[in-house]
Image (cartoon, rainbow, N blue to C red; front, side, top):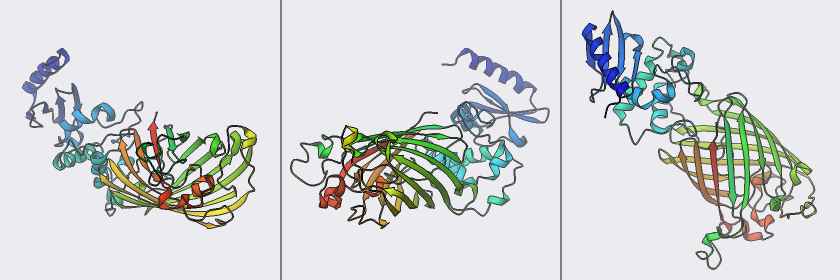
Length: 414
């Protein structure tokens, strides 16, 4: 049923068509009309209730699709909407940073926390048409600088794989909430009555949470809090994205500095320096390399609810190298694997074997959910290299038989 605004717009379209030198339908549904009046092209979308000039004097094939699917968030002329935080496609400098493949990949797979994926709703021809429409908003922008960049860019769905950081950039003024749950007190794969205990989910969870804020599109700050039974640490962090593939760099490089203090930042302080290097293998796979130096690191042992039940372990300088891989098996589903060997002073920290994790991640609009198995109960920078062998004081808890369940949840609030 047509609403009154649509009927009025349809009537206006008929009047304008009579005055137009040329009029034609843009799409097969006959809901979008191209009009040429006094040498200028206009696009009238009756279904969306919009009228806007066509860029470059021509109507791109995907104008109707853009008006129906994209205009509400990106503006009728692609100029972006500040309150939503969408980019300005009419900005020539912004367009010069993108290849056609990147635009098509974003339309197809979305951007976690910012834009939904259209792979299940639009076919390749429609996605190509939308790509041309986005390009038409800045038709004279120079694309020579990106013509040689053929490799599509992978879009991480979360700030972390499972424990290792992805180093994904954050938009300026964006606020992201992150949660993690580790059911470390009971193995999910060994021991009696796994089903009766829901593979460990019936037991206590080490539940942590934090917030990340984008100061600029390169600089972000982060605060993280883990529970009492793992030392009750508060972690403060700053991260800076130095290189980004989306800005024509050969790989992504992020540098982070953080400070942890146990018992709600009252004692047992640990300082961390880390670099996050990631490289897109294809638009559906990315590899990660995370060297980390932790000064005054502590053995990962169990604490208690009271402050005096959190042990004062001696500080030990350590160096670990995290390695991770994320592969999209579906446009919004990824398989994740990671391992974090400590290459300096691991024995002093009681680490017999490096922690490892396997997970599956669902990437949805503005949030992601990751469910997996791991041998490390820690989620702060220094604690993630520790294992259940020291936490539970069970030497075999860092073997495959000691894998336990956990999950992460991230949500972009603004």
